Image 1 (cartoon, one colour):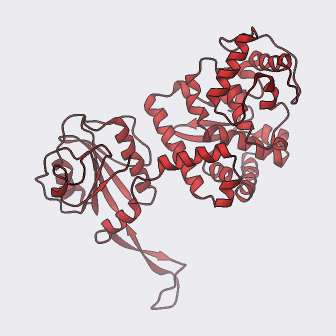
Image 2 (cartoon, one colour):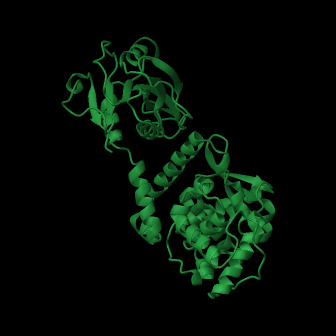
Image 3 (tube, one colour):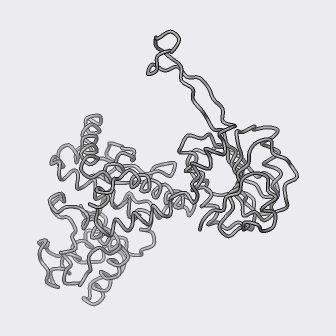
Length: 423
């Protein structure tokens, strides 16, 4: 059954890629798990600080049979992920009220015919004076104000008394309050809100939440980069502005592809690989051979006390861009000496080691005597003595926005190329 479900999900993915590629690309990038963990369909956090889509077999195959509704429910979940609702839920005291506000946000971006019956809509609370296309914090505050003014419960979830249902077009104050009380009474068990219980943001550490935020923004950035202008223009204005903001924050601060290509052109390794796509030029038969180039990089991170945490996160954002384009990366954390080293696998570590002074020599010596990379990239603020170790490999110095300025201190004496990171 699970294979059949995954085939059906793949059909929905292809349909979205053709018609609404932003949602299709994000859906394609999620791991899918079929089972009973979710009562319907839900985005959740998996081990390794990644996101996954939990699919209930019975819900997908027996209840969600209409293709338009499948697309709508998938888009609903992806929007929760794209807008970061999974990672900010812990900031709101009344979790059920937050869940209602989050659904008001995302359902504005899903076509009405793609929403299932009982969906939580902005129109249901029209009498509260809610403005369209606002963020989850705005709707949470306005709903809380309505509860206080109307004498409804404003504390923890589950304190409200149940009320009758509400038609989608009802706009009277009493009807809006009845709908809100109905949702609050159901709490996390309400059919429209129980999917949100898989947002385990309260159980995450600060480091884990930071890793997930980086992974989320990277997913959104790469999905938006695949969009053509006409596809981007079809998205709601609020979502377009959000994507531009994400793209601006996640774009590499330098044209590192060009810098890295020039930087490693004379030092990358090559190896031969058999290929059936390219016949042998000598014998005219397959398999032929193909020359592949690999880049083995040592990336040193200055973890001294003068480098703020924000710059450390910036370093790992740049490293991610390098790694995802195929480079073999060994990260070396160092202040006056090497604190630890590890192969980079696309995940920001929960913590860094160091916070002492700064000495550039240890990573250069390690590269010379042990690792022997094609090149060295050194992320630092540049405030240290000139290294006495002469590197046997090309060095690219990535200087933080608040670090050493061109022509200042040892800038001109640093051996290798210097690149100032933008803020």
